[in-house]
Image (cartoon, rainbow, N blue to C red; front, side, top):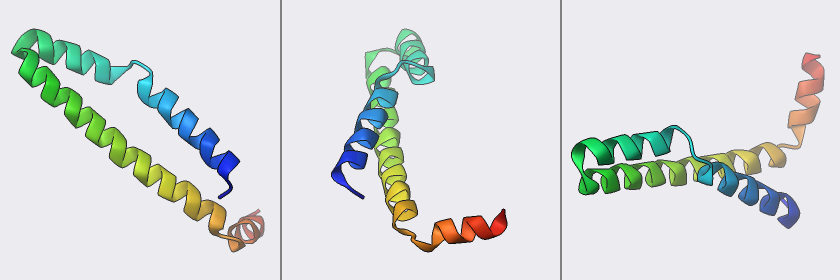
Length: 78
């Protein structure tokens, strides 16, 4: 994978990870009901899951681009 494609991927993943969503609601609700410590643990769990997701998706993007026969196989299906 060339550097340009990888940098675009990193920027897109970073923006998606920073966008508020269900994770923010979870951390806020846990913080309001169970306190700061539980909210910190929820936040660390979400960050850990995001790191795993980022690694798996980066490996997947690299593998799909490295499969030279993938395009030929896909054209056979059409």
